[in-house]
Each structure stands twice: as C-alpha cells, then as structure tokens.
Amino acid sequence: MFIRILYFGFRIYTFIFRPIRMGVRVMMIRDGQILLVRHTYMTGWFMPGGGLKRGETLEQAARREAKEEVGAELKELQLMGAYTGFKDWKTDHNIVFICHEFTLNGKRDNEIAESRFFKLDELPDELWPGHRNRLEEYRRGVEHPRFGEW
Image (tube, rainbow, N blue to C red; front, side, top):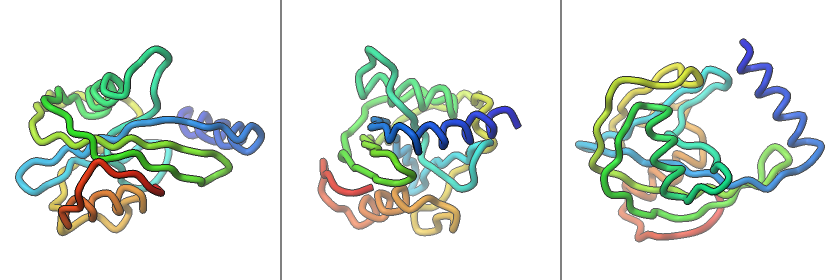
C-alpha cells in the first residue's frame, strides 16, 4: 500500500514539474520466451528495468535493475535501441537491451509482485504498449540498434 501512495505522489510531481527521465529495459529472452514482471503499485506487465542512478552507466543500470527486480545475473547485452515516450506529463527516454544468456537466483525486490516467462507469440493482454511494440519488432527481426517513439 505504501508503494502505491509513493507512486501517486510521483504522478503529482510529474504533473507539476514535467521531468525528463532516462531509464533502461532488458529483454531477457530464452528458448523463445520473454521474462516479464508485474509491479505491486501499478497494473500490467513490463520488461525488467527502471531509472538510472547518478553516476551510473546505461549498462550498469540494466544489470542492476535486472538483479533487483528478478534476481538475474546478465551475460552479454546487445543494444536494441533508444525510444522516447511522452505520457503522463513527462518525457521518458527508454534504452532497451537484449540479453539471451542469464541466470536467475529466484530473489526479487518488494516492488515486484510476480515475474513470469511468456512465449513471444503469446504475450499477455496486459503488456504495456511500448513493451509490446519492442517485442513485436524483435519477433519480426527488425534490425537494431534503432530509435523512435516508445
């Protein structure tokens, strides 16, 4: 419940200050399946990821977020692209990485309600649009790195 209150406060902040943010997402794909997460404070499914911390590189952020959210140790990362979204009074830049080799330790932080593998051709209805768009591009074999709208 506390995390939901914080999230509501963040939405008020974005309405007032219209921030520009940068975050990372990781497509963790194995055997034709993608690992997605569901948060405790909002509905829907997402690729693991989150915002950068001060002094952190994009790669460091991707590795940290994957470890925090799903207990993953990532091997080689590929850059899929950089995408920009203009939703909820803010500008979000999402850097998307692809990882095919990773290990999972079963640990996840408190903001993650659930993590689950889905077949790439059977994605959940509640998958957020930007995430669905990137996964559809991956499935179609669109060349990367790319950039565009989230």
